[in-house]
Length: 541
Image 1 (cartoon, one colour):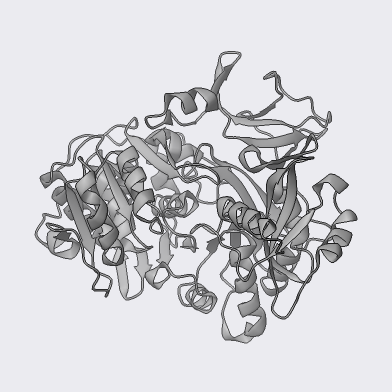
Image 2 (image 1 turned 180 degrees about the vertical axis):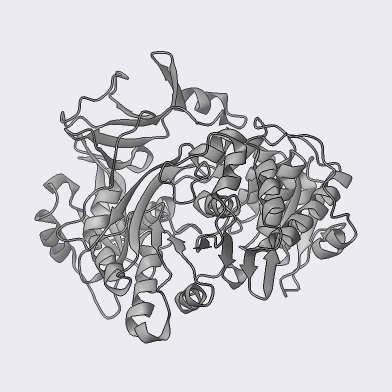
């Protein structure tokens, strides 16, 4: 019987459209049948290595077919794939592998030496599968070649029955602390993060698993996720497409190269392009503006940004070069799934916060855990009920702190703050974990960053708080200028005072050659804070 289990759903779609293309990555063009058989082979190999129900398998991989195969294979044998940040160094990897209780890992060879160095200290990690990538980096002794093991394993589906209660886990690095695993039932993440059978996340969810088959069209949607698959927005998009018989296009090696992205959009007739904020949108706009006649973009319906809100200037530029596409800001997290989206046309004026319509499962609570009164202006904690996670892996205290019960209803409160307009519209303010407390006022960095990006001399920026004897924390802007530009603190302050309250205006400016971001393109607040403290301590800015 088919359940709301991700492997069950995928196999059902495979049987309906076995010869339709499922994934394109460089020279590889896999049909649903081929993808399913490769995932079956990998599942059998993992099972032969002792991996089974509830066991955790790390995916330390760049974007490629192997990442998709790894997730599917784990789900087929009721194991749990764990997204591993491939940029982590040894100490960070040791923490994650230990915290996640990894028993096996699938890794691109270029990252294998790091695993070789930490494996002796990891009691549970016994099995390493290596995906060749053209490098000659040393790998752990006793590791197994990925393609050879697939070739020697059967392609058949002879797996035990599965359940909608099988676990899906997303490790979230957050912005300030060590990564933690968010545990979901697969049925819950199907509806909360993967769209519930609606690949465009418009709320048109299925009521039963077989409902997916009724939505298979002659020509499925085609999507190109640009963030790393270790970022939930990317692999949620992958499963949204696969469970609607669509096609996933993967940039070669998972690299973000604007010219390559636009070429793939035209060659593969991409309908949905997913990016992360201005860090990706601006280079894409630069390339399209410079070589508009080079690329064919008429099939593009949606450009969706998750993890970072697009600035008005960037929205204007994308709208100008992609007049037939919707530019959409999405909002969600590993703890909530997809919570809302804000379609955008050409924008004007100062940057505006993300707004999305209310729903029966989304609430904003004040400090007394009472619902914020619409129009009151009270900043409260954003919460979601319904399809939500089970909790955090091996962290009961964080689970208790994040998951609350109000009037008999269980909610997740991941740390985002919002207000509620008179009409009930939810207006996002920012994440509490990176908010800055200055002189008794709370400053949300995202708001200041969005306004600073409107300045013509600013290419990228991260705003942080550093310790201050008088104010508690002082607001600091870490800015990457545009080429041949040199904005001053006074110029930026004057620019912001017409847009923001005075206490939100940065008191210091740190100029950097390049703003460092996480692999997902989200701001790296830890790096920015360290850089700001170092620069200000040395009297440099």
